[in-house]
Length: 294
Image (cartoon, rainbow, N blue to C red; front, side, top):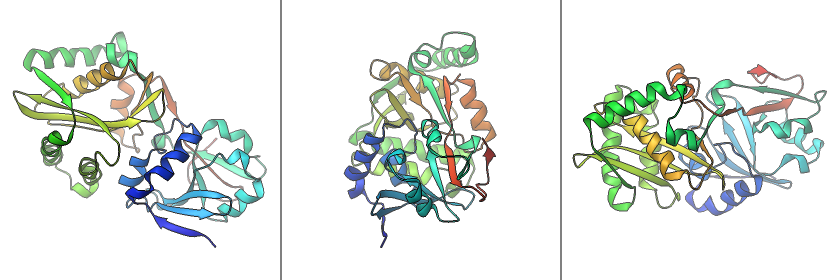
């Protein structure tokens, strides 16, 4: 019999261990993302005889299964049984695809679910033609403001929450249609989620912050970047400063997906991603995965 559990903070050691063992670069495989988006995505831990999985539902209302073990060590019969007729596996890295024979499985992907990965060194330097517009905004920012960046620790979380409230007010969008609730919960559970961040002040007023966590020894994942619109160029500054702080430890920055948002996509493309990590869907042949074919 399958055993299902809602995701709680107590599950962090279990899930984080599985993520480390998978050695994947995909942003979905972090405990913070699972925990913070557990309600929106209906995440549940499913314990089966063959291992542990996450059952979930995506933005299109489709059911999928997130593997927490390398499926290449599993039998194809077990995987077929796991999928049934109306589920698909997601997110599957490209290196796993040869394991799934095309006669039995259908592989698809959605561009809006792909991760944007950048060289930390390039983001820290803003050198070259790709970054010309961002350098201009950064220079304009420094011409107007004298920012101070401090580690985001317990005594600074209230200031970060004030920035988040300002960001939400300026968005003119209902909070349930933004990631405000998830970001607020990240700040409320900052220590428990083992997050890292920097908060930025301008003239002693909190102006912006960045929050993230390591994906592995080589890649850092940025979950949230929030700031007030009144500080033109502050996002360029925060990304550049974050890269400078992290470049001695991490080769890559993962800025996650664009969720099909055209404005967000253009912004992330403008920073010159080193690569785009596609997250594949795998389901039984003869069923509809509802995305682009591979």
